[in-house]
Length: 264
Image 1 (cartoon, helix red, strand yellow):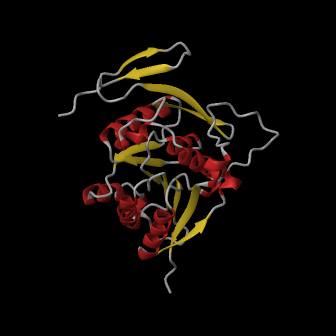
Image 2 (spheres, rainbow, N blue to C red):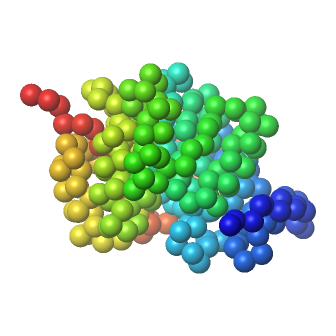
Image 3 (cartoon, rainbow, N blue to C red):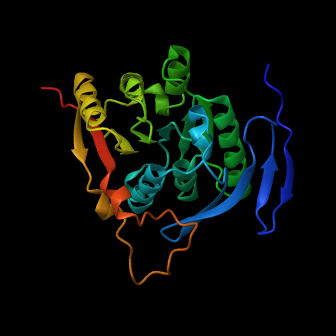
């Protein structure tokens, strides 16, 4: 039986608010103000990655930075009345920026500890005046979770946009991912599943594409260098900005937009 969160807090020497929870699981979260393209959100994160691979959702990974910047720069294409679903949300940075832009977003993850962190960040977003985020538990292997998530879409017809970042770390997760997306994405011509991840294996990359075709999707590759072109006339971005300056890291990032194959 899981113990209740202790929710003790204090402030460190840099003025960051810290949250302390269970003793044997790293829940020492730091409240950060994160900037992207002139906008900012407040959220709680770990200062470093957890050693438990199931808890990698407690930090902001490079793929989430890239996906967030893409979303912010293309925010005009998203209908504010139609919720966007984020799978494997982690700390929820993508969805929190969507809320900052006035868009509705449903954040999801399968790990209870990460879901608790999502709820904490959604509460912070609401306090900051951006109350359009919701949170739901979504285990891709749990049909009940998938059905409950589907009910959250507009008129229970599926989501027009599903997003995900670094959710294909393991090859074994790819088929459950597409099984889930196939059930939750609406059948409109404009509907899309937007995926960003760090390539770790060319075999996994090809397996991903093969599975997408198997589930009836076509795909478009977005050049990653175009997402991180910084306007030199803008204010210099600080260390809390969602910017990737490592050229090697940029070179191994994959950004793919999947759409359902048109019916003949």
